Amino acid sequence: MRVLGLDIGDRTIGVAVCDPLGLTAQGITTIKRKSIVLDIEELAKICKDYDVETIVSGLPKNMNGTIGPQGEKVQRFCDALKETLGLEIKMWDERLTTVAANRVMLEGDLSRSKRKKIVDKIAATFILQGYLDSLGTRL
Image (spheres, rainbow, N blue to C red):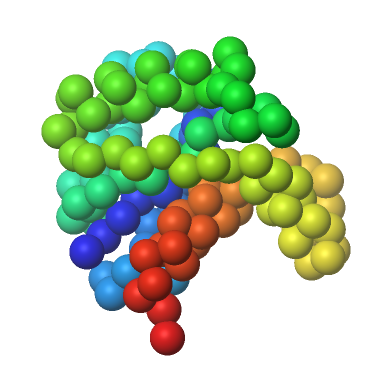
């Protein structure tokens, strides 16, 4: 079972994938957004390369649990992605994943420019790992 994790933003999409056993998530790339068609084409190629069966997308929610404008954008993108790829897409509450990703990188003493380049990929990894952990497949 291969699962793809996404952190979808206005300018970039962080991408992570799990190992073949579905235990651990690894960040693989950050896609610079161009257009919905080109973004989906790039994700389709990744899904094919990694033999992905399911996609988990972070869903940005407000701290009170409601879905705001950014969450609605993500939902629309995921609807188009599902329509094009025909893969199951699960939404995962991503509140504070970017904060957690930045904290980990600060602890790793990464420079601001390096953090900026990989924060979305790390956030996608956190989203995917949270989902994998919820499945209870880890020992």
